[in-house]
Amino acid sequence: MEWFTASDYWLSRLVFQRALAALYLVAFLTAALQFRALIGERGMLPVPRFVERVPFRSSPSLFQWHYSDRFFAGCAWTGCAVSAALAAGVDSLLPLWGGMLLWLVPWALYLSVVNVGQTWYAFGWESLLLEVGFLAVFLGNDEVAPPVVVLFLLRWILFRVEFGAGLIKLRGDECWRKLTCLDHHHETQPMPGPLSWFFHHLPKPLHRVEVAANHVTQLVVPFLLFAPQPVATAAAALMIVTQLWLVLSGNFAWLNWITIVLALPVVVFPAEPPAVPGAPLWYVVVVLAVCAVLLGLSHRPVRNMVSRRQVMNRSFDPLHLVNTYGAFGSVSRIRYEVVVEGTADESPRKDSDWREYEFKGKPGDPRRWPRQFAPYHLRLDWLMWFAALSPAYAGPWFGALVERLLENDRDTLRLLRRSPFPPDAPPRHIRARLFRYRYTTWRELRETGACWERTYVREFLPPTRLTGAARRP
Image (cartoon, rainbow, N blue to C red; front, side):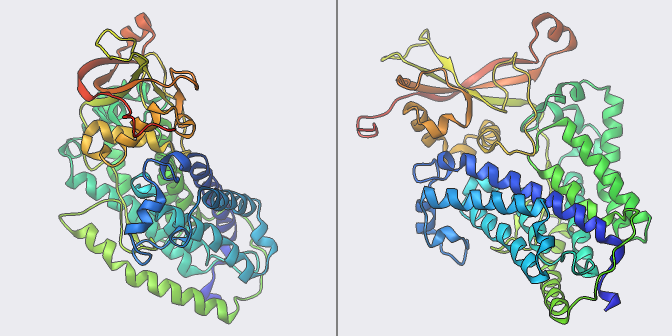
C-alpha cells in the first residue's frame, strides 16, 4: 500500500489539521454568540419559520428535526468543545476510526448550522469550511501516513478557490483588466481593517503592481500546485504570502485564513517522518470510494469555471461537498453606509434628538478607526454593507432589526458596539439614512483626526415606531 500514502507530508497534515480545527472553533464561537438575534426563536430570520417551508432533503440539518434556542446553543458549544479538542490533538490519541468519527462531528454540526442560517450564512467561506472539513475526516491520524488522493483533492480545492477567483475578476469588472481596482477596493470593501486607510493611500503605481501580482497568483500559480516538489511548495508559499497581505488590508472573516490553511498540506516541511504501519484495507476502500465520489461531483464547478456566465460562491449539493468560489468580480467605486438612529421623542422631527447606533465593525462615526475582527465574522455588519448597496438585500431582515431595536432587545444590542439608549428606556422611533463615505486625505486626517468623511445622500427608512399590537406586553 505504499502507493496509497505519502509519509513526507505527515507534518504538513499535522499543521493543517490543527489550524483547521482552530478555524472550526472560530466558526462555532461566532454561531454561539450571535445566533439568538439572527436566527433564534425571536431572531430576525427564525429557524422554526425556515424549516416549516424548506424540506430536509433540500437543507439537511439537525434542526429540521428539532429546534430550540437551548438546543442550538448546545450544538454550537459542543462544536466549540470538539474543535478545541481537535486543535489540542485528541484525534491522535484515538484509533484511526475514532479520529475519523471525531472529525466528522464538527462537519455535521456546522453543516446543520449553515443549512438553516439563510442569508446570514450565505458566504463562500461557509461552504469552503464544510468542503475542506469533510475531506479532513479522511486524512487520517498518527496511525497512518497521509493518503495521496486526499492530499490531491485538497490541492484541487485550493486550485478552484484561487483560479475561480481569478477568472471571475477578469470576466467581471474591467478595472481588473485595467489594473485599477485597488484604487477603490480598500475604501469600498465590506469591512475595512485598521490598515485599510493606509493601503488605500499607497501610490497608484503600487496598486497596479498589486493587481498584476494578484492575477499571477490566481491565474498562473495554481497550476504549479500539481508540479513536483519543491515547485509545489514554492507555489503554496506564494499563495500564503498573498493571503497574509489580504489579511492586513481588510476584514474578510476566515476566507483568507482558510485559504492559508488549504496551502499548508502542499508544503513539505523538513522533518523526518515517523514509522507508521501500512494503511488498513478498510481505510483504503473508504478513502478511495469517497474521493471517487468527490471527483465525480467536481464536473459541476469545472463547468462553471469555463462558462462565460461563471457564478461565484455557489454550492452544488445540499451537503456542500463540492462548491465554486470567487469574490469581488466587481468593485464598487463609491462607498455607501446605512446609519441607524433612534429618538425618544413621541413625535419625531428633523430637529429631534436623533442618536446614532454604533456597529462593531462597519464604518459609523467618522472619527472611529476600524478594528481588526477577522477571522471572527460579524454577520450583521457584513449584511449592512449589502443593504447599503441595495435595499433589496435588506428586505428579509431589516424590518425585524428595526423592531428589535425599538424593543431594546438584549440579544440584538449585543451585536452592536453601543446603543445610545439605556436598557429601560427604548427609543420611540427608529430611522435609517444613507451616507456616502470616503477616506480622508493625509491632510484631513491630521487636521480633524477623522479617517472618514461622510455626506448625506437620502433617506433609507423613514421614522418608524412599534404599533400597539407589535409591542411586547
